[in-house]
Image (cartoon, rainbow, N blue to C red):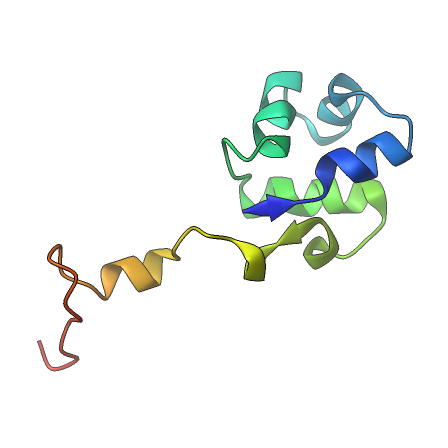
Length: 87
């Protein structure tokens, strides 16, 4: 999922470690979120948005994500065909 964590954090002059301390996670976890290696839980995403005093949708850009939602994935068979709703 795309995000603006680094931009917002740097605008406040905050380090990854400082942001991690404010939201109860490690510098490494913040780095993984910023570099899009990991996605935060909804609760961590909410806490990060609260630090920046902006809506969660301003930090995490769901519509720009290349990753399929779990619901989209579960609707398909492994061969790529759509699952019939009567199955």
